[in-house]
Amino acid sequence: MTLPAGVERHDFGGETSLATQGQPVYGERTDGDWRRWDPHRSKLGAMLEHGMDTGLDGGETVLYLGAAAGTTVSHVADFGGPTYAVEFAPRPVRELLDAAESRQNLFPLLKDARKPERYAHVVESVDVVVQDVATRGQARVATLNKRFLTDDGRLLAAIKARSEDVTADPDAVFDSVREELSSAYELLETARLDPYHEDHLGVVARPRED
Image (tube, rainbow, N blue to C red; front, side, top):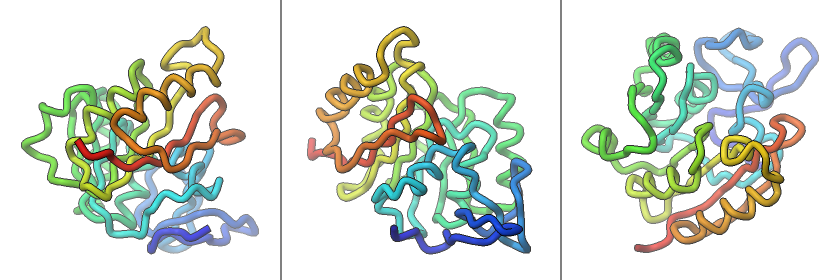
């Protein structure tokens, strides 16, 4: 598996893990400037641990949807370029602002990922959209935010089955989401994120031409 520049496997007290260099955010283990990227706390970290071909090289401009308190997006900002972090809930945004203090390239936005027109005046064209939103209609969110992606950009999405329908079989949910996503994206790779995240599907896709 090829990791993006700025992401390495690092030893933390005898345990080897993905790591980036930056200020710690969520109590993760550190070794000097290196901070452990915990795949149990990060869907994107789990995608990398599974060896999914994310297309990340390092230095990309990123739009992160569902940034929460900054657990994953802080790692992304450690190795990425300008990183726009969209989060709807005010309480985690306060912690996200703390994570951004030591990262000049991390821009928190208190916005709703289902309404990209509310932040279109702020966000430039991006190389990558990372999506981790726990809401019904996750494929629709990805489709609405396709507008920001460059022609050869990538969508890296973590689809949570229980957010779509808590009573439905996850495989059926994932099939439905794949079908809906396919109208706007070419799906390059999908994989379940177990054992790190139960009933989650990792998706790598690129935008179709309009």
